[in-house]
Each structure stands twice: as structure tokens, then as C-alpha cells.
Length: 256
Image (cartoon, rainbow, N blue to C red; front, side, top):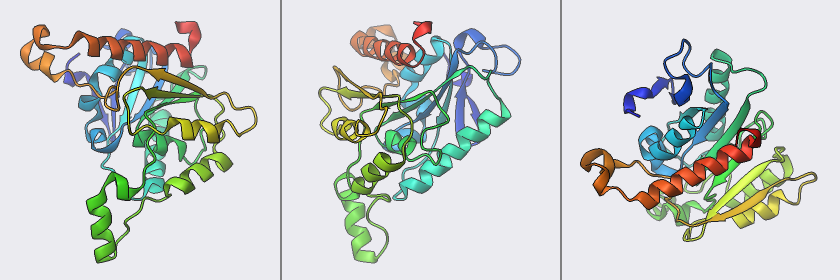
């Protein structure tokens, strides 16, 4: 798929499902459901490039993709609210059939932002959290934290890591959550999140361990685009395809 297949909708980038592309009203027909994606850290500035392979693999399986483009800041609650409003506005402007599945998909920081959505996870069919990361600002961006303390601006994320987990435990209402942990990922904190989620009544959270590392979901396939198939790593494409199939089958198993 060419980059031109992506359409900008305000702060969102939208990709119609492969089988519905070219029809009137991009993505409104032919979709098995909707994926609302938030990426992690500065990869999320251009999600259609940084996560191209994963998002396009989901589009190839019939999903309409909407990815939020943003620059991370310290106020994560404000950014979670902003992303939620953008996704809600897009749903109102171009609604899918009422029975369509809605998968909230996040990577790293993007998982936290989905968990902090002001509807507490109600308006979706489930959340898939890839490589959940909830570190403090001091560990994530130590230089900014140091400068913040020196010059008097905010130097910790809001909510803090501890407050984030407390808020999730008290307020988050979505029972269906798939936490994906990659075995070589030293930044992943999915087990801590799992422990908090499973303390809630009627929780249906699942933790899945896969081969890979923190950047496994982020694959642009640039070497293949620039140099051709011979320069590509087939194992990376296989990892992405397997992940896309797992996500699609988990949120809507009858499509598997």
C-alpha cells in the first residue's frame, strides 16, 4: 500500500480496509470493524509511517484504521482526553454499522492514554495493549526531568505511574483487555497492569507472551521500500502478520 492510501482527518490518519478501498465513503463500507490506534513516544508523530506494517496488516484483514498523531508531553490525562475526543468526533462524522467491533489498540505510552480515556473504556469492544509502559518521567526522559526541576516546570507525568495504576483500578470499566508482552522487552510493565486489572470484578484480561522486543510493533519496512525485497527481513514481516492475526481474531473471533 502506498502512503497516499492514508487520509488525514484532523489529528487522525485514516486507512480504509483493503477490501473496501475505492468505495464511496472511505471505510464506511466493507469494514469488519474499527481500530483506534495510539502509538508510543515519538513514534506516534507519524504513526502511518512508524507502524505502517502492523496497521496495514490489520487493514488487509478488513479493519478500518484511525491513528492519532501527537507529540508526547507531561500531561498524559490531557492527551488521553484529546485523543478520545478526536476518535469520538470521527465516529460521529463517519459512523460504522452499530454491530461493528471497535478495538482500541495502543503501543507503549499509547496503552496508558487509552486506559485514561474519559469514558473509562466503555465505548469499545476491548483494548489491546502492546508493551505497556508506565515509567516515571525521570526514567523516561531524565534530561527533561532534570531541567524541569531546575527551571520550575512540570517534571513528572500526570498522572504519575502510581496514580495511573490506582486510577485504572478504581475507574477503568472495560473487562476485555489483551496485554501483549514481548519477551525481549526490558521496558514492558504488562504484568503490573494485569495485576491491577484482575482485581476488578468480572475482569477478562489476558496476558500474551510473544517473541520480540519493545519495537516489534513499530515496523515501517523502509529497507524493503528503498532497496527491494532482497533487503527485507522476512522474520519481521512474519512477526507483524502473526500479531495482526492475533489481534483481529481476539477482538472478533468469528472473523478468524
